[in-house]
Length: 206
Image (cartoon, rainbow, N blue to C red; front, side, top):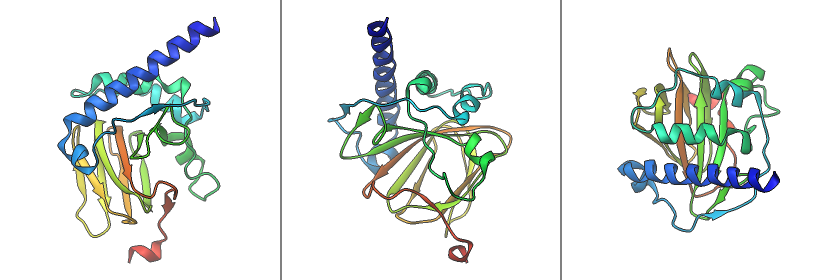
């Protein structure tokens, strides 16, 4: 029974890697940001469940036209991955923590590792606000399904839809908001992987 479970989970992870790589390679913005690594290594990951996983998996409004296989693969891996608690022990609140869903596909506490990139999935339900935050790593978002308002300090707000991308410079404050639709993204980091995101103080936004 254990061997069968391990085989099934391995198939889920390999499908996740294959579909992620395929969608990434189709985006010129993502590949220009940083090429998908050719030295991705499999590593052990201990599953860690959070309530946000259930919110993501139960969202019937997500419907990717361009990347349905990737969306399905991200969901299929939900029970076998380590769901992140990026803003634990901050004053962001339980409602945010329970509805903002993120797990790492390539990186720490992820099924795969590479020295060249960190790659995450990020999900936000409808009518959700991800407040201003920043981090040293440069970042590229790619919308897999849904849409949302992307905000970057010093830039005009953008409504991004499926296939659209948004680039964040090192330590550039940025924020996201969904309206009537949910949002699912691939998020890539390059350089300075060790420093996690932090909420941007209001004083830094003036």
